[in-house]
Image 1 (spheres, rainbow, N blue to C red):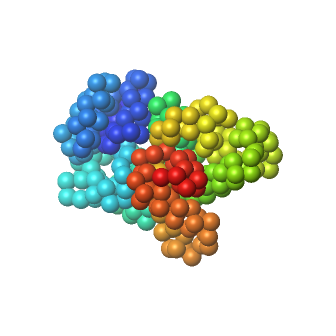
Image 2 (image 1 turned 60 degrees about the vertical axis):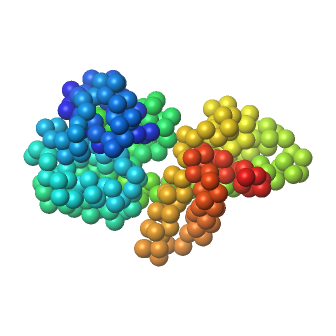
Image 3 (image 1 turned 90 degrees about the vertical axis):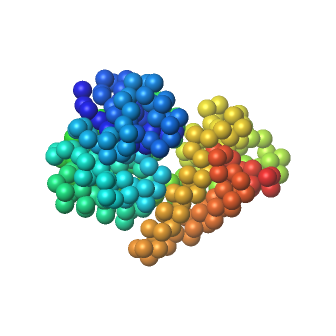
Length: 296
């Protein structure tokens, strides 16, 4: 049993914390949302009064926060968790944030004598609930070895991508591929509709041919071919369009910082920004097919 402070127990962090509780770990949770915190407490967590309180007297602190500024604030501000934690505490940040923020916070943690991993996830809410997330980790091999038994409770695929920041680098590269491929798959299905080609026929062909990709075979943007995809639930979100737009913006910021040419990534970022700005931020990202069809 490990004593864990979990900061940020919303749509993703909540199920992750519950899986740790179900595995027998002692979780102290904090969230700015009383509803999210209450749900985690109902699952067996102890409520903390602040982020610093959640980080006190535990062996591991896990954070799942919206953006880089929130991570910097929780870790580095006066009253932040680096100043509240006991010696030897391991920090795991599973937020998806910019690489520079991840490396800055890890550097500060190291200077304070702590081990830290950036460990963003892929798999959406469904993966968080099922404990099948993919963790992309950046940090030392020692920190990874300490974290892995806990990450194994919450995920299925756990990979050390290299030093601090590399977990975030892997996440934004992966999601740039995903965002661009979902747009391409959606465009193909809309073109098929206009040409009179049945959805299922296109799926049966492309899912076993050179057009095969995860956006096609696991998350098909039209109802029918993949029963578990959000297209069969009116695009109820497993991973929102707003989250995809955020990740694609992070990818473009990173690309610009290292002068990497990403024309398709830039186009995907523009498409998802348009989709989000049209009021679709809480729709599943595969719902972008609606905009490609010309629907609202």
